[in-house]
Amino acid sequence: MSRLDNFISRMTAQRDILNQICPEVAKMEGLVLELGLGNGRTFHHLRERLPGRRIVVFDREVGAHASSIPEDENLVLGEIRETARSFIGIDAALVHADIGTGYDDRDAVTSTWLPDLIARLLRVGGFAVSGTPIDHPLLQPLPPPPSVPPGRYFVSRRV
Ligand code: SAM
Image (tube, rainbow, N blue to C red):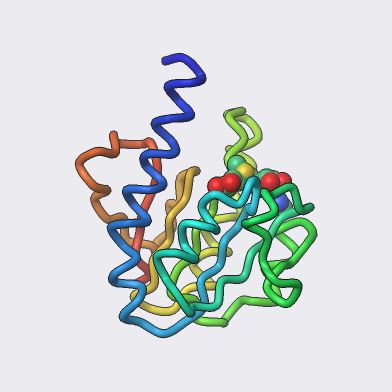
């Protein structure tokens, strides 16, 4: 698969999974946490799909389009592994993590700490959506929409 095809497939998976779960997220209380602002596309999408919901966004730096920059009080800068720790127990309704790099060795390191962090950030019944695997005993995998091939993007629910 070309890198362009791979990018399109990732964007499609993000959109389709977020569209699938946002109606459920809208029914439950709790923050939405966006791990990885990047260009701000998925933040922008979540803001549209979950109007009025507080979305707290994490990144090392702000590199987003001007239309997609969170308010200062909803932006946390620094290494997510450190900065998100202070949100443990917040009972988030959704954690979306798009911090994969495309390098297997780097993503394998992320997979050593991200699933446990996500499990501690979520409320019971809350959703985890991630570009890297989120294997954890408290995160029950859900089937993605039919448009999303297995292993492309991951969605789980906190048990
Ligand atoms: N979902 C975003 C969008 O729609 O535009 C794209 C996110 S981009 C792929 C990943 C972002 O996560 C980058 O901006 C990068 O700086 C940030 N990031 C990755 N790992 C991180 C870490 N460990 N701590 C802080 N930021 C991180």
